[in-house]
Image 1 (cartoon, rainbow, N blue to C red):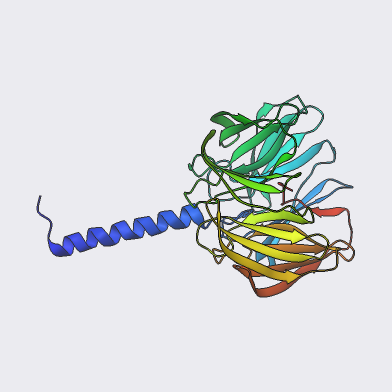
Image 2 (image 1 turned 135 degrees about the vertical axis):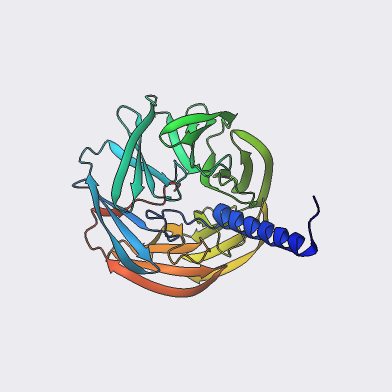
Length: 337
């Protein structure tokens, strides 16, 4: 078959469009996006009544949402938020009953529960959910577990509320090594890489993951001062690679590490928030600009909520959607801390 020069050019353009669309789907998905509009939303639960509420966000403004349901039994706890069925809404809610160990997933659209399923019951309380991410690049969020007695790490590959695969990863017996976050630090589209820190030495290590297999290990740095704590992860500069947000709990200084795999490629100091009442609650993309490193704060004294719109270590916008004065209402997003 002979293809003309114009035909070749058309094929090249179509291929470029496909690559760009694939990159956008793989790299620019906002966490906690309950309605699939590309913007992170905020999940709340009232710890007194059990009522669950979603704020649909448009930057620092609440654009919609409402009550989801009331889960009055306090043994049911929200453990993670993700996209377990791969429908593009990253607000599916992962619950576990701390008495029975039953795991349940709410498939969400906005503030509506569209399906409920239970993949398994994990009765041994030593097994704890440590985070979620797409470990095998199929567009569906998977679950990372660790046994706090033995140190064994396991990944469940998910297909909606069903376990489709996975297995044991490795055993990290030293309890000083703690999982701090899950992300895609090398930008390969698998958002299940595991970020560790040794709480004794301060060494930081990243496992590059594919399914339950470790395909690479690296250490970007050692942060020996325990006042410096990892507060969350997100793609702060829109390059498709997860970055790390730190805060010094003594001074309040906030720093971003821009990552390239297990290497620090840039970043720097953001600002100093000296008042300890201001706490980082989550990292996301609240305005839908593709940078998933925006920082969500709440003042634990006044209840005021504030969002920093970020680009790298620079604050490019600040806004406050509301003040939630009742301390029973808690933000339920930053599940890896």
